[in-house]
Length: 383
Image (cartoon, rainbow, N blue to C red; front, top):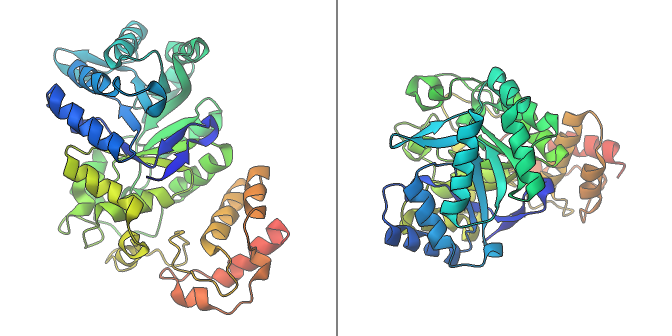
């Protein structure tokens, strides 16, 4: 398993993580088997957005057989269970009651990330941020019942607003190559409508690109939901790229984005879990998503560095993908943040060593002007 640090929280999490959808409508023995299969394969990061008391209790009971320090929980505030159904709420009494139930049902004293659930428009964000819900989250953090505060959204505008506020350590976003090309929207339902994808795409939407770089620069971690676009990307007939992607390719794309620490898949079986965890042992060829993106009939990523690593091997051993990532992070900030400079300085070889041989540009499937980017990086970072 690959482990990553969850931004400025310092918490180490498995890059492949578990959403809670796969535990729905399962009895306790089935949930226990799925938890055990996850833990055996190093998957120790669990998202619990659901307010379903059976799911919470089953997963909590299964996890309670392990030492608490061996697993990480992303638990959501503002979800409640009413008349046998999940509901989103901002009513503070319901928020308090549901979170207290979460701790009891999960058999824990705290959750690692207290995720304020599902904010997709600015009015809702302002109500939460300036109101009782945020005050309650801060209180829980002071009491040690949550270790860090997060926010989940499908809207990159809201995610960027939240990241820049400084109040949130973790952001849960719907990320995949199809969604990345769409403009921001307050209506999450458009992400599941086939006609949404009937358009010509010009690479990653600039707002999403800015979000990734801003989060990386600020130390805000991204955890990913909807990595397979609800299965759309796994189906050749539905995919906007005209070809099906594999689960490993979807995982690889998400984990290549700046600031992404973990991908939450809704794995419902040991086989689906195995397919996701296969990312960790996959070859570079198996992870490669570049040809699917570059050959898509209605999209163009020309000139965009996707950090896919096809530029390797460099004649003088520069890690070109990392240099480009640090360059983009600095350009997005309009300056060179100290953390980005430090990461760049630690590279074994720097952009100034580029001999402009052009081997990388012949390898790049996206037509990136790598030589110019190396020259720009050398000037910006000083070596």
